[in-house]
Length: 547
Image (cartoon, rainbow, N blue to C red):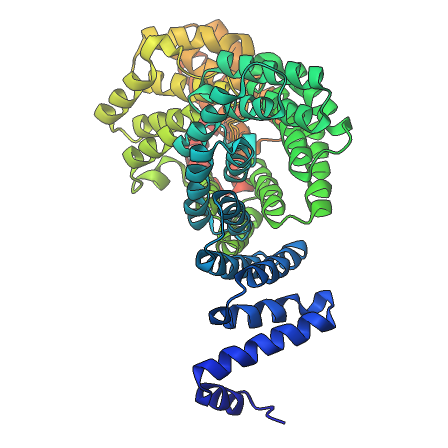
């Protein structure tokens, strides 16, 4: 009879507190007796509103049922609310023990992570790690670490909380084939500093695979194989990485995340080889996998990679519009890293269209510091950018930092060639020819490779960087051969913006070393590409050489 919300609110507010609590508890009892999964949220609501009436465990159970029901349909925001109700009820229950508290906190933190509330999830799971460390709950330590780092793609990002949790499990697990030890080894292989030491990462993940095979545990083996995808991500182990990804995909009972991991690893491996058709096929399989799992964050992950391909292929207008949509969706989902990825795409478009002038107002030093948290290939890119902007003092300081131990500290992971290519360009711009020659020696065996980083951006053929070093060192025959290879490779990769840059730099070198006649057709090619792509700075530089 009281259908109007305002009238109901007035009547509700006029009820004395004790009557209100009793009415809620009565409603909870009646709805519980009626049963039905559709009533979980109503029952939880009434139990929560009647907490002063006691029976806290019934309130906790009702809230957890509502949270689980919400999570099943991916209503993670609602699930978080119900878990918070359960935690509030649990705090009133004097019989609650540490394990029960930690379990409920973990459930809440997991839903917060899936709802995109990353910082809140981190605080909640930090509380779980603290309780689990005090009481030896190794399973909760491992599960919390996995929620905070669901993919090996973040292997370059340090995380002290996750590392300490995993090291605690490893310290107490012994050397036997134990699922907890296998999980700790697998996850540690993808957490710095272990993840940056590729030999150590390889040892940890290999031990995890060996123990999992001895144990005969399929789930443990899948997790260990996933860790191998990071430790095998460098240019020297492409075939091994593809074999591990294939085994992971063929294994029964793999989770949607692991399936996505395997497809992402295959994309990176094919990009290294410059096999873009195979990379595109793997990207389509990734799309099917993430949509099958109906996991919004994984779908966003796929869509981000797909849009990067548009940037790298020179489809700037389409990519710019998709960037805007990706950014808005990341904001709605609460993805804390969303802006980082979309800004990287926007910056790449700006650099392609406007050249170095697009970066005049950027705080490159701050970007370099941010790159220190992410991956050496990003830092190397900022060094080259700083040098190209003419900030020689800052560029030289950053270059010195990265050239320690003769570049031995640059991890031989998926971003290895990308880092070397950027550092080689920086060395040439800084006229540090001794280090440029050493970088040439490191990069030369990979002249036919592409140069992806951990985000799966790439700079095109490694031969482009080799050509720049050879030209600076006066190695004319090598420079010409590398430029020709770079043109051929970038055209094969479909990397039209990089093809335009390679053609421009080759034409400029030819004009200096071989004469205007040799430079003219190459410059004309650069100008034509620049016109098609809207790369006006390339067109302006190529036009005089093209005649």
